[in-house]
Length: 230
Image 1: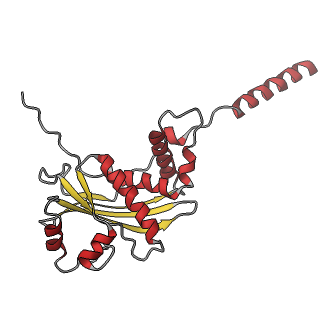
Image 2 (image 1 turned 60 degrees about the vertical axis):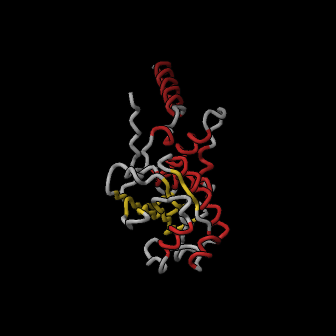
């Protein structure tokens, strides 16, 4: 009887040890993932006449953030907007905006400076911009858990019609956001090697902003591919 008990106890130890060594579920591959929901668009497809868009400098009303950091984020959002291949993107720099209006950024919820659109059309006539995108940061937390609030609008530059808008909050404290950010990091890194360093995006404000920008611009209306004539 004693020998039987020893055999049973040994079997339980082996089973428990095996369970403890089972691989944990990787959220970056299995989810759950973050799905942006506070998004509005006038149509599921971009208008055919919106082919070139002007990207405004990022505004951060009421958020403690340096202009140097904003300049870095401008480059991040520009890269991710270009990556969508929805349209050609023309960037308006802070210095150029200051020449036009006397201010270095414009909050998308504030009234536009008088004559801004007319002056913009005159200056960018060679570019023939059809739309304009505003980006506001509503929150910014550069320390873990990282956080970024993004409010964006795409408007027709001549008709002043809002074609698309999104108001999203990305925080690494949300497991779904963290999983999505890590999945984005894995996609960007590609098959670089056996080591999974995707978790580092949750400590790097610039890389995390890249994920937030990509997730935001992924909600833009799609572009209908042109038909190929026979």
